Length: 186
Picture 1 (cartoon, rainbow, N blue to C red):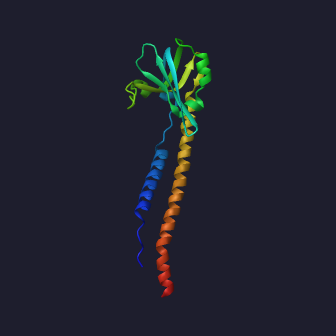
Picture 2: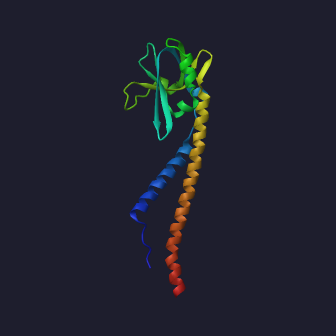
Picture 3: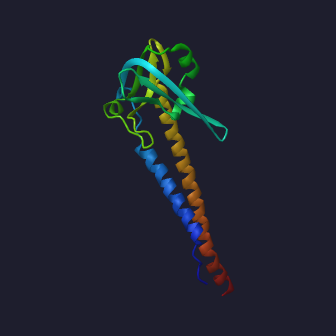
């Protein structure tokens, strides 16, 4: 008795699952956390700070766009960490327009700002915001968040690998079963 091949949908599912697990493993193994020394600070007068909040499936997310006087660049505290690490209420209550603000971002981004597809304004993604002696978000929080995310990537990669092992074990048992039946009848 010949083994039937897996249905097309099952092969596609397995291919996508294998690609996803490989992507997680490669991401985990290639991960290099930023260090505080990788960041630089830009100081300027605050022209505007606009918060954008949205709700997706009962989850709140948002970002903050900051404009400095005499600068055509857009500074953005991005969604990844804005709601968790940025002290929003304190920032809007304590920081008036025109005050001196320090924005910390990767030195490489400050040297060569990104231009997102949907917004042609050159953008620098900010990971630290300080006004005087007050910190509203810190680089150390972002670095710790990066490291936590990488451990979650490892956990997902390990779970995906275990699931793939289970699937391949079941497939191999499926292919052994007809041979056992033939041997038993002989």
